[in-house]
Length: 80
Ligand SMILES: [Ca+2]
Image 1 (tube, helix red, strand yellow):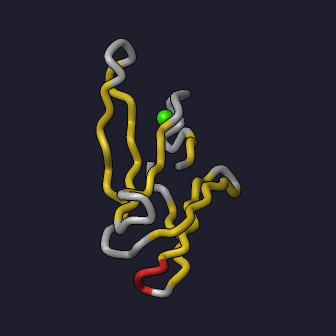
Image 2 (cartoon, rainbow, N blue to C red):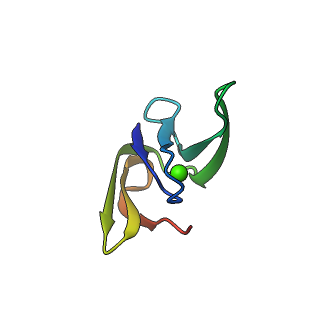
């Protein structure tokens, strides 16, 4: 799990791998501050992400993922 402001609105989004060491990478965005309601965007599936890392470079957000099910290291650029 990692947190970052992927869309630059001042609020942190939550990046998760599910289920534990599962096949999906999702980004959850809080949609209702009082009810803690979230929506999720599925970033990738059937890849088996074991670890992910968020970082920024020149104002752009990136997610690096070790995808063990398909034996790859993937770099995702977050589009805003
Ligand atoms: Ca945000």
